[in-house]
Image 1: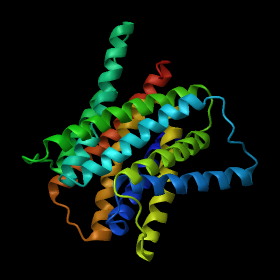
Image 2: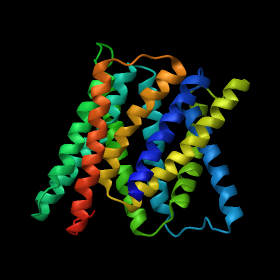
Image 3: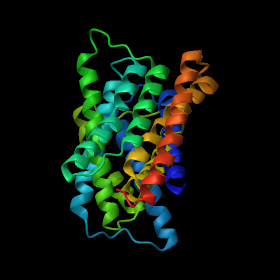
Image 4: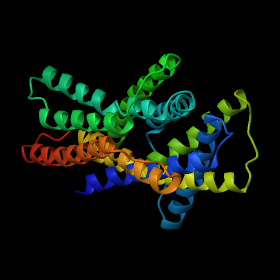
Length: 291
């Protein structure tokens, strides 16, 4: 139940972050948004840790560098693709990460001579069908390259989740993982921003959007890290689909977007998939088959 909470909380935070990006940060480049998102995260976590008596000292700096490179590349490519293709298609392709993860676990199980986690895989496939019903993807003639970029992002995210899992096994706390991701991400994004048009001076609305984006991106990263680093990765990836219903709810309430019956069916499938994955994971844990 605790892992389910962290995964769903992460989905909600990233959906709110997306609303701030859509509402307040037009005119800024993708690397510039990554920079401000990372800057807020580094300052926020450093302030919280200093006030709680914790430490940011780490013995696993190499692992943080790998995780940060993967994370920055993922976010920057995602923002780039999002600006060049239909929103529904982009988000659907981004959410192929759980499918790649399910395939990854099937291959690992076969290599070890173990039974693949078919119940969770079925839940993931069901959730992805729900994603397609909600997003209604359609590939335009000029969207082939952005679509390939989205699939690359999905694979990069898979590698980043495995890296987080490895650091969790090293007992590296989630706040430290997110802090170094934010600091190194800020450095990489600053260089990328200077090479792609430089920084812009935001107006008051833009500042509010950047603060909201930074806050919920940081909270989302902390929740995601706790979920993937210390819990079942297949369950976390399936529950990540819940970001789509959250995004639809925010689209209706904040941007006056409409929802048709097909989208409602899709959201119901996502809900069923999440509950099915949670039940299947509990059964796996009872048999000692955690990952």
